[in-house]
Length: 274
Image (tube, rainbow, N blue to C red; front, side, top):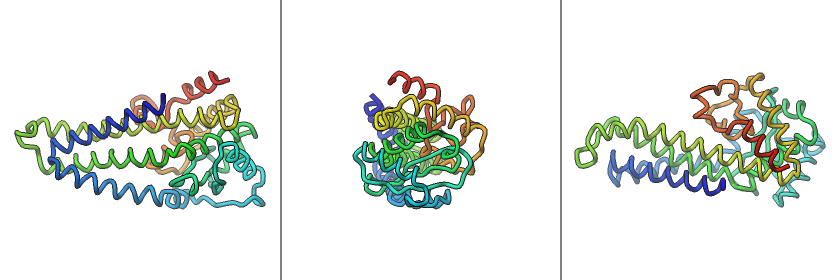
């Protein structure tokens, strides 16, 4: 069901992109803007692992440095039938984790110092399995395509601020409405895709570890930790973490722009699996 929802949301993004392109710049402008956005996001996708790991000062470890953590990743990746990813530790007290890499053969799993201290063995296994599920499902690719399309829509909208549409393209008022509303809609759809992939990673991660209850418990503890332990995170990478590092700031209307579904709902779905 999550795969169908993701595909439908991606299709809506593409339709929205086509409508904006037609309203503002016509077919030629639409193609140019999409090409630029695609090139930018392709570069981001190709080098995303190096960029984000360096951003958080993550340190790669070998088994001798953290045998329990390394063996946990190794055991679970075998259950998931994946190549061994690189393992990193982030010097942050906020309990959190993410996976990155352009494909399963070039993947990395990063955990913070805080998560290693907070969670017990079963809970940490649940979190690692969740991140391996992202790798298994190639969610980095999905999010990159969504980001490329959303960025293209934003580029077209900015272009429209300088070049209004003519009467044959819906008129100036219609074009201006499209300019201001389309980027907001694109961001909301991109966030919805991210939330859909989190549900899928919870489900598949629970299957990999065989411990949905432990993952549910971990999510609750991580949510509390994110709300009470600030993290110097970059908003553009928030969607990568297992829980939103800005959870304490996501209230009211801001939750519409959250990259993660409500933790209570994630926990409820996991408990149904038990």
